[in-house]
Length: 480
Image 1 (spheres, rainbow, N blue to C red):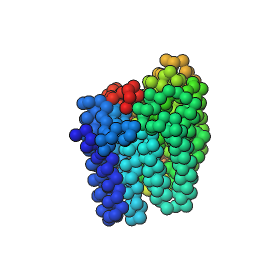
Image 2 (spheres, rainbow, N blue to C red):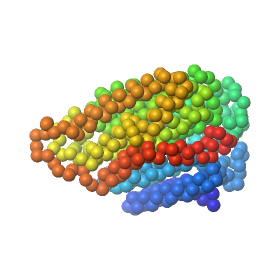
Image 3 (tube, rainbow, N blue to C red):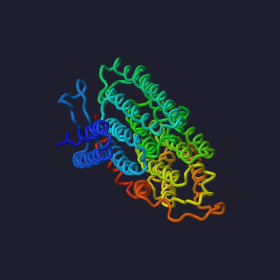
Image 4 (cartoon, rainbow, N blue to C red):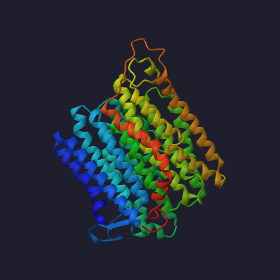
């Protein structure tokens, strides 16, 4: 019984992707069914974890190190649930947002392939399998990036592909070093291994590869263009979900293979601080709405790395919880914001920020959704983003790392400033030179982003149960 939800979580989207590709006319229906079945499997798996703690499955009956096993604990199931929920709502939004036959034909198999890779990441207990899954994710993500077919999207997709290939090669080199040193690649082997220079070098290679995959400053060069030029549903998936897989792997690896020096933890936090400040400045300068939202993703990624380093090397046993909360908060809110930005662009006809207040058409529900998502990303109560930031600062203050509190506050002020640029345009009417449109933007396509934005706020009220759940199965406290 325990094996059924895990295998279903992996194979439902995989078979759905194959069928959606083979039968493009039925791609929408097949895609929705696959996403719903996957979501049901995640709920089933969550009930098993609630009842028993960590759940494991040895594929083919062969346990590590000879075989491959899957493992679900509180953290991995939380990531699966966030992916399934966001994916379902983005899928519903795509029904209206994607009207071009070519885009519809390829969106569903690519999205379901992406879902397969992400679920594989959250259930894997073997670093080579993680490499395979992040390559599956990259293949689908690049395809989604270029789906619009514009020259800017193709250029962004090419940059994304180069960054992804380089990151994957670095990660694979690290995997090779681990195998040469230990003769095994499963998490249990990593936990019991004695620290050595070879393992430290392997971890360094894998961390740099993941930094490229997550677009951590200064390796963020590919992300703003890729996320800003994709279609709205693709942007929501890329920003809300794809970068989270690499962040999750980073949390796992750096806890199972502890960073050998306090200086490295500080360096990771410093790069996160660079992302917060540089990304915030670039968001202030962005001329297009989707580009501003993309730069805010760079900021939020930096904040997650600061949360990881908030209390130094000693505090890593607790800091992962603050990072996990921020990952979940960002995934939901950013998907909502990209979908809302897409709705605004579709209704107004452009997404040039300084021209938004000139438009007689006001997609009011999409604008309201954007504002709600901004509340969570800024970190205002009672949103989950606020709880994540508070956890970050609380841990930093308790450990005496006040500089991380200062950076977090600077990032918050920058986020207020660049989101206010957009919100002010929504509220101004003095530059409108035509009769104001009424009730613009009230459509089925607004349901998905609004639900996500409301969830980003409401989940803050459930922060205590979420924290209790992600600790089930001792994600970083027991052998997988």
